[in-house]
Length: 349
Image (cartoon, rainbow, N blue to C red; front, side, top):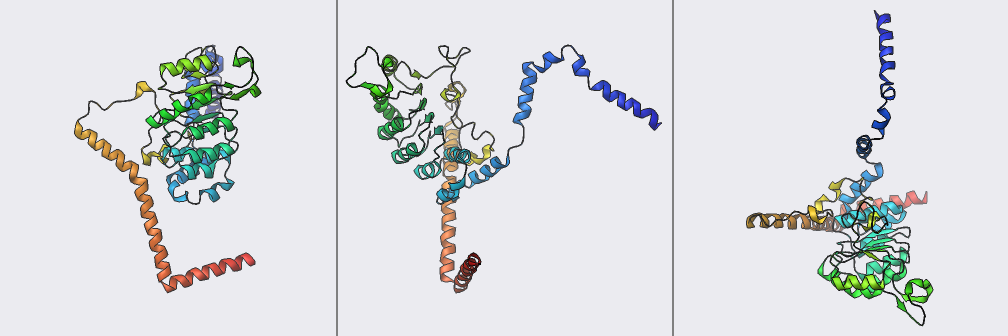
């Protein structure tokens, strides 16, 4: 009986393998959009890497390492530093101290949108990151025209710039509009487009894409006339924009740092109530909600936003209490001194 069943199993396996190749429509199925979409979905469901898991753990406790971030991140690769910046931005912890500690000279994109970074932080970063090609400073209320001017002067490869978004950022954008326009000094010519870069005293000569959703009509017309190379708020289409493919970083509905954290668990920054960037058509309104529901949602949002700060204060109080206990307890002092002595002996040996 066993000998009779064996060849049936083998024949069945042989007959089942070439079924796809024997079908004349199999090749068309493989190259069909549905099949390719299924393959992409399977690839997206792959488990996260070990680095992403570690970044998720660090991100959940990011506020605990901010004080020693410069020493901790000294040996981190540039991609890991950029991921930590993206996590800190989503957790509402991105400020001057964090961005200066993590800045890397190899960065090509910088997303500071909605952060607490000020002129000091941006000025220090652009001195280190001189090869930036895409920068997002939208909704950064602490930035002024001074640091934006340094950004344009130090980053000669800047092609994509995002700004505006909140009242102070809109005011800064209006003040910086003149920085994008060229200023010619003692030159002759019908158009500045025909001049060499060395003949242009000022102006963002490398800038090609400007994302400013609330730009006014007169400002848009002025930019179009004086800076024809700069495309403002490009709208994607099947043929691109004026025959030019729009880069992903120049789209309004995505964030610059999304690809950096796509493999990291979103629960890492969910503790701060981070809301991802969405297109205007998909934004839901709360006008139809009752007043009590609006108050409840506002309270939950505020409570979620202040939760990391309360946790940080609690940890600080615990550390102070432990330090005071060590200073007051003689036995704790003896144990601490003995630990230091053993460490020094181990180093000498």
